[in-house]
Amino acid sequence: LFVGVEERGNASQTQQGTVWFDDISVTTTALVNVIRRAGAPLRLYDASTGEAFVEGRDVEPIVDPLVYKDGHFDSFHAAPSVRVLAEGNRLEPRQRLRMDYYAVNPIFGSVVASCLLHEGIFAYMRQSTQAVANDFDWA
Image 1 (cartoon, rainbow, N blue to C red):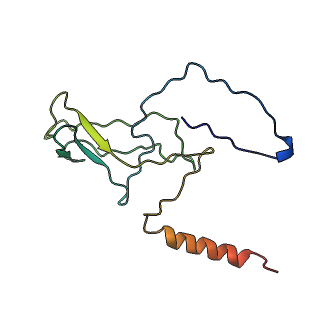
Image 2 (image 1 turned 90 degrees about the horizontal axis):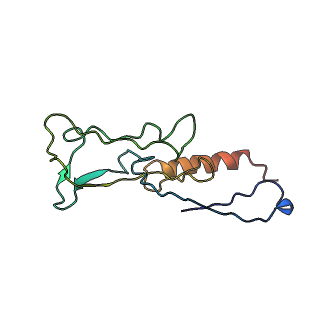
Image 3 (image 1 turned 45 degrees about the horizontal axis):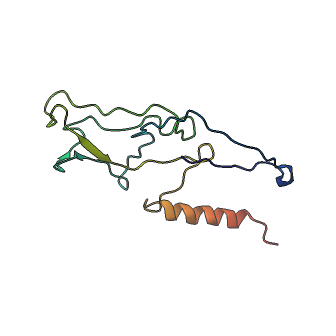
């Protein structure tokens, strides 16, 4: 559980108080905001044997269509389903699977961090830095 504090406005106008949490529910949020790209692989495998299963052969491609919607990220939406392909899959009934995947975790509304493993991040950072340097009045 993460409880964050975001300060807004004048710091001299801060207030103190008490927060009470009651009837907390903890639920699984598997695959909410799952990221799918070359630098963030997803692995689906048998929990006891380690046998790997393949998207497109055993299950439909796994995506979260709500990972980024209307210009922001959102952690409060239904998790996507993993759908087993009707024919040709290698899964057995009641087989226990595990999944390793990458997901974003928005903070302060819809802010997410950049992945330093993504190949384009450093070019983006150079361009942004140069743009700020060009527009800043250094006098």
